[in-house]
Image 1 (tube, rainbow, N blue to C red):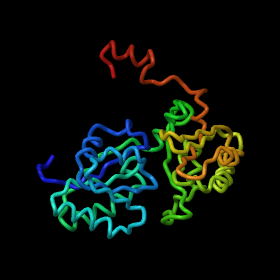
Image 2 (cartoon, rainbow, N blue to C red; image 1 turned 30 degrees about the vertical axis):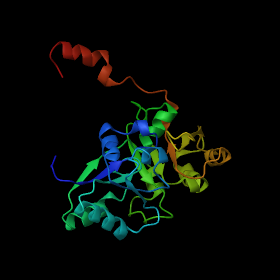
Image 3 (spheres, helix red, strand yellow; image 1 turned 135 degrees about the vertical axis):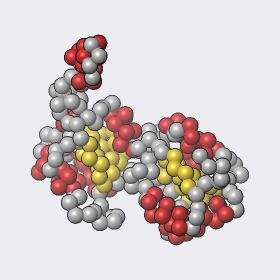
Image 4 (spheres, one colour; image 1 turned 60 degrees about the vertical axis):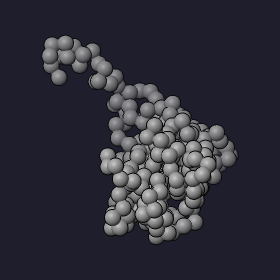
Length: 257
């Protein structure tokens, strides 16, 4: 790691501050300037910043304004942290910020975080991959109010694989999501909606896909929710994992892999 003063992009995790990595906590606690999306990042995470640190809510800022604040902080030698909810590798707009900062010669460090889908699976007490049932997880997003989805990535096309499907950013459109997924999965497919995973106001709704939107909305879900669909959610009917099978362990005893 360089001894210079990079701008740190930090994955804030799903919300609970004790789910932050040690490196993330150190970065936040040591920052001079903290940029975060107030609508997505938990206040408990923001509160880890020092009292004297400058806190900037970027919810109403444009990309160019955010980049300018990051670059200006770097030039001034401020320990600058850019917080993103979940992990930076998906749906964080990391790439467009990095490209502009690199053009400006600004050094960057990336600190990963616990992704929202992992926190949702933990809240459900489920593994998203079950041997013999489902070994593939598709992470996607609802695209109606955001950047259009590329060709081949429409929801129905992804659902056709009938793997475990995790839909981000669709808490406000659960009825439409349910209707679009029903033809591929059927009304009895296991499904769950998890809102504010790991936050104090966490909401978990489980049941068949048919009617999941109505049940979630009755539970007060309006936003910050994931919809998960797939047979793996049933948590049963799978094969024994080869990793811990007697056959594999016996092979190891004889020097075989």
